[in-house]
Image (cartoon, rainbow, N blue to C red; front, side, top):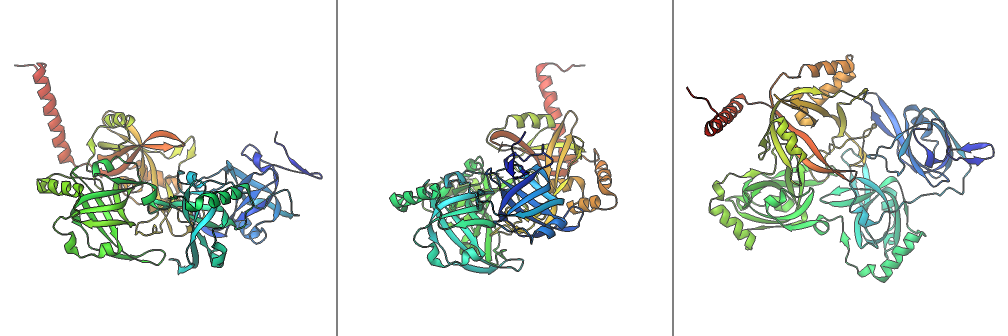
Amino acid sequence: MAAVAQQGEQSFFPISEISTYHAKWVIRARVTMKGVQRSFNGRDGKSGQVFNIQLLDESGSEISASFFGAVAEMYFPKIEQGKCYTLTGGSVRIANRQYNRCNHRYEIVFDRNAQVEEVADIAMIETVKYTFTDLHAVGNKTMPFSADLCCVITSVKPVVSFTSKDGKDLTKREITVADDTSTSISIALWGERAKQEDKIFEGNPVICLKGVLVREFNGGRNGSLMEAGAMDMTPKFPEAERVRAWWSKSGASANLTNISSALSSNREGLMDLKTLSEKTLPCACDLCGVVVSFRPIFSFTSKEGKELVKREITIADHSALSMSVTVWGDRAKQDDKLFEGNPVLLMQGVLVKEWNGGRSGSLLEAGSLTFKPETPEGQKVQQWWSAGGSSQSIGQLSQEGGGGTRGPAANAKPATVAEMRQAAENVGSEVQVFNVPCRLALVQTTKKGETQPLYYLACQEPRAGTTLLCNKRVSEDGFCAACNRQGKNAPRLNLRCRFSDFADSAWLTTFHEPAQGLLKTTAEEIRALETGGGGRDAVEAILRQKYFMEPLQVTVRAKMDSYNGEQKTNITCVDAQPLQRGPHGRAMLKNIREMIGMLSDTGLMGGA
């Protein structure tokens, strides 16, 4: 039985013991973080209110709690950060790591049964609890995540004010911090924290930050101190003394690794496109190739209000592969004549990511672009192009299109379901892609008796510096952890489908674009059906009409992924098109002729 804290005749349940196995409890805790109250639209289309807090008790354990609906409106003005309360009447569930930044395995949801009462300050409960992560570890964790940092400020930028896409006036300041792992990172401070006088940040003070959201930006890692976080400019923790001593002794002259810069943190040097095709993404590298095509310049406005210009070019090299690379700003504005006539380019500092089942690059601002480089690699590419590369069949690492139906990957191998399953089980570090003729047999709608969701709500705000949508899953109230804000969202399909051919079947995860192609309907239409009068039954009736109705050519991608530290094969349907009966029939006839020829050669065919 869990231990309890006593106050007179009142017993309090330790936060460290909170779990789904204990239904009745009363906790006494300090509110160490309080978020803003936000509006959200639920699956039923109804709007509501929500806000989040973090609670710390005498056991030193911290847990995240959310207030929804009417209780959110009731308690938001009553609960204050830094004060102590008794709380009961909440439900406990497994913490959602995508949104929950606490280390506790569980989280609490308070609804109409919530009871919260303010109590006198409890001196034994800390005002803020830090769980520090050093910057070397920050550079190796899966993003996005939240961390508490203890660092020295190495540089500071002026305050910047701007208007966000949704009309909010924002103020931010960027600081660069480092710790005794000789690692540095850029952190954005917002609002009143950013507006503090410059002299507060001068002189390399040690700073402690609680609740820094770390996410990928331009191939590096950048932090943003969340609104409900904490900042201490005069820390007296042992960790702070250690960082001060390091800076005074050797840190000020140390060679720091900046994990906010892809060029300094993980740039892998010059490589050909065949080598790049086998690299784990994202990665930063240098490329040398010939321009095989280019697009006109494209101007647009980012969500921060910045006017941006980009141009997409496609380069190929002597490995007979090509890839699309985006160049920005003045590099993109250069005269079209420079890109005409298949010139050789040397691009240093290209960030390469997965996009639409392929690989695409973006030349970083700190990188460089050189036309007709007089280097051994440049000469090698030019000689290949002149000696026949221009007429050679070139494979594509990048997939065309963004949001529409995509064609099969250029390097996909034809396979039956059984051949695809066997090959996928033995996939190595290189991604394998297969074209599989089959039919849709079933869509999983229940699991262990529970209804399976067929879609999720995804953020529809543009990613920073691009026209591409974020598309990360948002919370129930519409908050996007990747963008660190609430914005537009839309449903995206996420199906588990069973595909069958003449001999075998396989379950494949099938995301939005191929799922819409399979069902011949949109995620919005599925959502409207489910939330309408027909409910889930109407959706499942539509699904049943699709089973075994049409032969398909399904493009399947198999690759190794790391999940909870374990290597597992991830097999996904990335495209689904109606089967082209003519080409497929000719391929079958070719296989039949080959089999007849083999039988004839072995003498197994009978004669007249």
